[in-house]
Image (cartoon, rainbow, N blue to C red):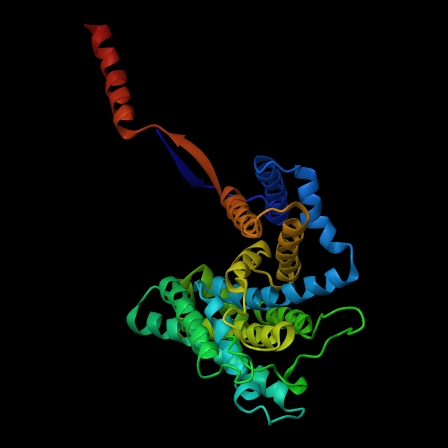
Length: 374
């Protein structure tokens, strides 16, 4: 006896629309159970996790800071996934964008002026796109699995960053700490409302990127090409669309946006390079992309939801003393329920008896008339 997934002839439009909300509700229920198993009051814990971080104005600024890289990366990933190219290495592209974009303030600190920040952002875009081109080349040239190559390149980027800040880029006046020199004011992203909090132009980049990519996907021939090749590569080839070009386009656009997120984070919230510049934004952005239904506008809302799990994890850690890993648990459960709901929308579960028992039953049934006639 086994379970089988059988494709539904028609999918429910209603459930397809509210699937993210159902997944979020199931995550809250599962989270309450987890807190109860940890010996905490579930309602109090969920309050500190999802409500308390939104009570203060400065918390909203922190929410915007954490949501910005998630939205920027997820918007790029949505193009990859819609075109059926599976970029799992946005974390590495985020890091490489931060590294390349930091070259000016780290290696040339005397170069200052209004051109510094635009050049840093441009270099961040180039760094992320160039790093994403590696799995694209390996896929198109050698037919390697882009999931594995893009994922393994994440660890290369992490170790490269660690080597830089502990070695050649270490601040000579930093008392031997593994970090670069602090960026000068011309190399720092301006804050939107300095009197109220730290939110910077990163969130503006995120919203603009989401709108532009939405227009690209839904209103241009290139977007139509993305959707056709993602849904049916064979139909795309008949239409004259190039699969190889699409692999490079999707990966490099995704990598460029991840690199933009990297340099925005480094020049905004951090202000220097350190051994760790990301709490896992590149991986959490995968959840954001699917929670937003691979729609750039939906990703904006999903990015704020995931950003809230980071803030909520910190608030719950301080208020009730739970582990900082609780935020990762919530993110994992959210992805699980999103994918589970989507699966059940497109497929139904059927219980199938084993072939041996079915054959035996068929033989016995066929033998019944013969025995009766005898």
